[in-house]
Amino acid sequence: MAAPALISYTETTWSGTGSKSTAAVTWQSGDLVVVLAVDELGTTAVAAPTAAGLVFTAGAAAGADSSHCWADSWSATPAAGGSQAVTSTGAGADDWGMAVWVWRNSGGIGNRATSTTSAKTVSLIRSGANSCVVFASGDFAAAATTGYSFTPAVANDRQHVQDAALYSVYVADFGDQGAAGTTSYGTSGETSAGPFTNLALEILGLASAAAATPQPLVVPQAAVMQAANW
Image 1 (cartoon, helix red, strand yellow):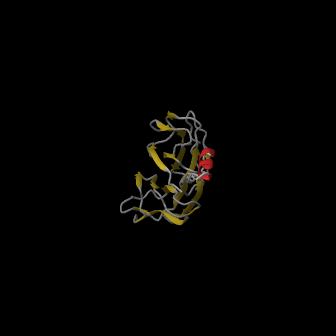
Image 2 (image 1 turned 90 degrees about the vertical axis):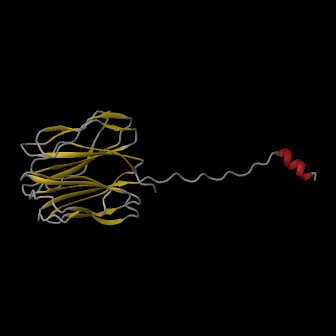
């Protein structure tokens, strides 16, 4: 199994309301485009993202109540290459943001895990070997991110920001995670008691090309006849 290749990462701002668009995101046919969004308040969902040439499939919203941040994920596998901004809209007057990854040579979306507790991590059962993981978390307490670190060791720390007294956001992606198994993804070290809305999503690897099947040796008939006369 080969790990998927991370092609690009793009994000909007994490403060501000209403409609937002990323910079242009470029993909090839068969790539996997993944979006994670976090909103400061669980009762105001973020609309499904849109981009010409992409049809997104949603996960399931986490923290959809008045005492947690809201989070969800979407993915799309384009049939043709393209380059477009990814756009979405947050409901109401609540701050929000989204992150967009493009993966290549991926087997698609694997398992997904969410939690809405004081825990800063969420346990994800990875179903495949050599998967990668994307992660986003919203801290409803809007506490300072001072002292935080991602766990486990992170390939890319994408975001750790406190948006005034509204919410705090953590975003990361984790490279090749090795054998299938269970790992807790999230943060540690910051002093906040949350609650945290955590979302971890498995990006599957792709089976390596099968080894070429050996072909039988074909001996020319003339050679056979010549050998018979020796």
